[in-house]
Length: 308
Image 1 (spheres, helix red, strand yellow):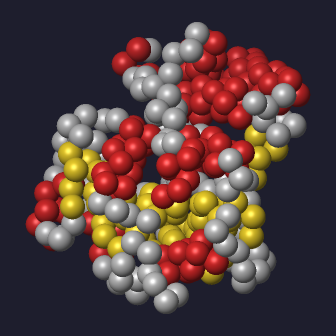
Image 2 (tube, helix red, strand yellow; image 1 turned 180 degrees about the vertical axis):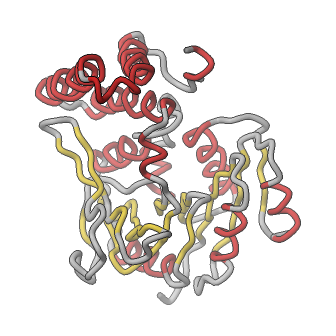
């Protein structure tokens, strides 16, 4: 590229331990010069923010003072970055580490086509460095489901060498053009966490922006699938926000039927009737609470454990 657009790298920190420090250390190896890093803290009570101050004095820190969720925290970061003149914003999870050329590859792809509004890398598991967690996302509009392309597949180059259109990019690592935010708006704060980036990508696509996966841009994610899937809090947001996504994206009755009866009700019955799922009784309550809150329009943050 003759001219490198300015990229603001936004990392959301919330009691992240040493993850944010490790992420920043990997960013220090980037081969892309026209970027700056912003850590947005959502009211951490551990020492993670102090680690950032001590070891990365050049990093800008914004402190929200409370947990604004993925949506609120990143929206604060994007608004600040745009005020600084950023051409692109990169939302990056604190529990990631990046290849030195990943940002260059993302920006190069986005600059090659004015219609591209969002771009994302191939994301692999940190503890399985050659296995894919996400190569972009797909939406099954008939059943109201989303899935990560390439999930749990060894990365053998199956997605080719060039950028490819996808339905959405996970917020774990998402590059967005300034024009998208100006024309489409920020993340929908009703989601708080989960499904927000999927809805954002759908909103951008409706405005004519392309969403692409850049196969050769690589990020490693320290995600623990089993731990996340067993979390009542995650179950709540994933269930409630899936229903909000169906509504916001304007998906049809088939998607609602499949979601409510084919997935949610079937899961509820299995957890209620099958002895091997007796340990899911509390999760069953969470599932129903998510549906009820969605029906009543109760969005934003919810503290499930405290209400049980």
